[in-house]
Length: 197
Image (cartoon, rainbow, N blue to C red):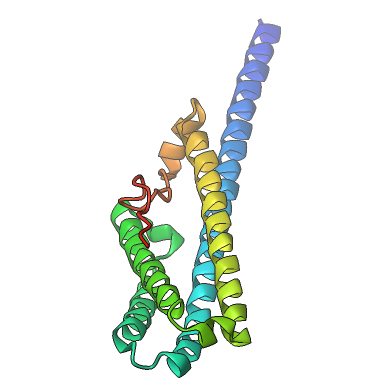
């Protein structure tokens, strides 16, 4: 009889050890993936900040050539200020907050587009080395933003899949790991831009 009880305790201890190892591994995996999402979000914010830092130099360069285009210049400055004032932490990325963030950044992009279009009317400005360099940096930054957003979405996808898979979803629910929000295409981006001459 004693030998049977010993085996029972060994089996129970092994099952408990496996459950503990599973919980330990799943929890630490979620923490790692959650931190990867936060890091990717910080990279997105860094690229948007880089763009915001380029804007004053670009505006000042254009102002020297096209000072009477005041409304366009003011729109860029206002959009930048609005975007900088809107801060979202990775822990507070609700669908509404992320949509607000995207709208603010979209306004900056639109205002910059109008500023670049204004520059087309000034041949001297288009030939200005500072302007060309700033424009190239801005284009590079827009590419970096796209890459950072893509990486963020990939990290969010990995995390969201991990918290939804069974049996890991039990651990995720127990410890409060909820889904993260992805970047989505901006409203109206499904329509091709209209180019007119």
